[in-house]
Amino acid sequence: MNGQPQVRRFVVGTAIAGTVFIAIGAFWLSFTALADLARRSGIDDAQAWAWPLIVDGIIVVATVAVVALAGQRTAWYPWLLLMAGALVSVTANAIHAIVAADADVPAVLAASVAAVPPLVLLAITHLTVALTRARPSVSEPAPEPMPHFSAEPAEPAEPPASGRELAVVLRDEGWSNKRIARHVGVHPSTVGRWLGARTSPIAITATADTEGTPS
Image (tube, rainbow, N blue to C red; front, side, top):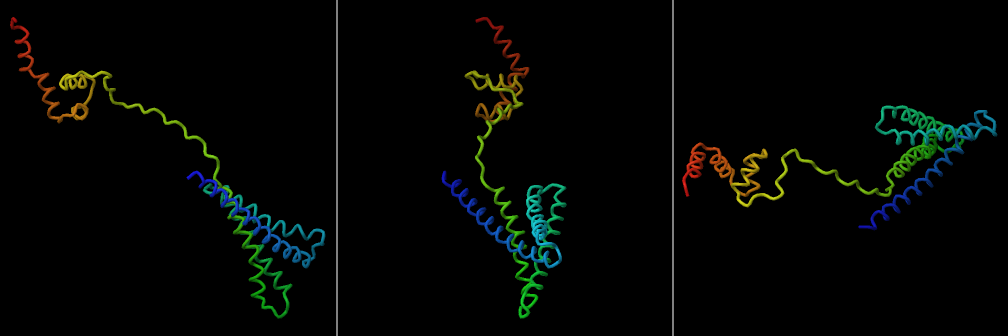
């Protein structure tokens, strides 16, 4: 059992390394295609690299923000940026493929192949962030449980030996007949009989007569 955290940590670390490697490849393919499209669109060669960095960079940043803000009301904004960045990247890669492809290559095929890198970049970035958040951390010692304070009266430390005497004492402390019966190990009716005999006028008279009789 002690080896499971280490195995899981190794698996998650391997998965993160793989996703990072794939993300770099997808980013590079999309980067070169968008940079070439920027040059074909009239942007200077010294500045063409910035355009794909902006387009694909927003996908990475927005994906991280989506995971970080998951469940919060402000998560809609990074989702909007993520969808907009993915749409621009996929469309631009497809256009570049159609423009740069050979004449004998169908435009649909070229656009489909070119759309894979930005889509993979989107998916793999989200997976990498999710794996990073799921990486097991060092477990902190569990806090000691707080002592439980019962609202019921505490049981006497040294109960009397007689069950009847114990019932009387517990009744005076506010215990119910059922609880006294469970504690003493008798039927509730027995407890009721004990306590009834204690307060019964007949019992009181009998007790007084007994005490008044000379020995």
